[in-house]
Length: 217
Ligand code: AMP
Image 1 (tube, protein in one colour):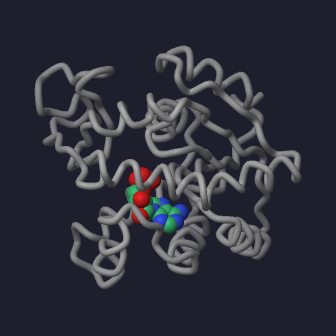
Image 2 (image 1 turned 90 degrees about the horizontal axis):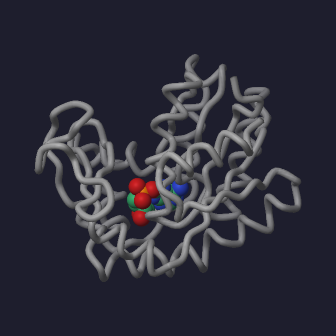
């Protein structure tokens, strides 16, 4: 069992946060909280929150801090988060990190580590624009690097694979710009709190997973 269990996965889009969350949450029985997945489910269900979020997401912009922080606060209070969790794609701004600290203090929780997924920008763009996502379970595949066994079908659940509208080249470039401007300052923020651990996420999945386990012990 890994020692550090209350986790943030930090890194640019396409760095493999979702890909490595999947085996880790299964092996360690951690709750997986992906703000992107929650927002996409809200859009699919046609909720008010989904309608608001879509206007930002379609442009590769960030959904307002308070909206996502409230969403995460509610989710962290669920019983399945008590044994540990992965926050995937949250926080994305220093303001969100501060809101998170407040919410966690209220429910007596403490972060154990922030894992930074590091990869060169060229590789991120290549991964994003060739990514395929499952409509049913949200799993990621890739036309170039991690093809599904059957074209267009999810290996995990048999769901339909599609290309996310924000994985187009133009929006993906904008998301990387937003990451560099608004999210990258969190690296210094969490170094300052002595929580940051870095892994090389240009590695193939099995090696990346081994590197991840090593920094969580
Ligand atoms: P992701 O699936 O993590 O790549 O997120 C897809 C999109 O959802 C992002 O480009 C944002 O528009 C929105 N989003 C996800 N998480 C957050 C967050 N923590 N703060 C603001 N917007 C977010």
